[in-house]
Length: 98
Image (cartoon, rainbow, N blue to C red; front, top):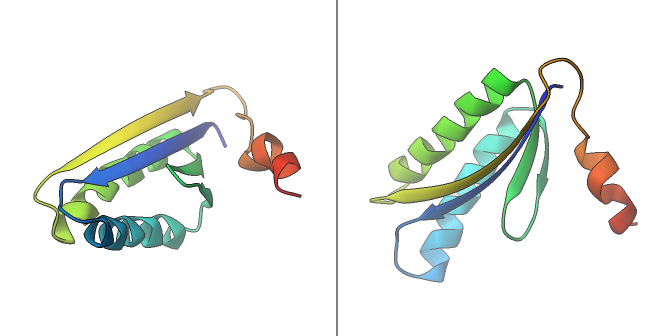
């Protein structure tokens, strides 16, 4: 696992219920990839291979548009270590959620 990505998808729609509906579709897609992920209140963290994660980031925006968002903004943080492993989600947050 050479990369970790945190993504926040903000669909350009009116109303909290519609935002939540579209973001839930994006989160369902992320979970369907089978990669380790952690859903937080403002972003979702995913860990895996860098190239695979970049494809997932792209697909998240497309899913939001297909779900009805006329526009979408995404805020992304990437941790990448080409020769080795990045810190895992578990190492970063488990101690705070016991």
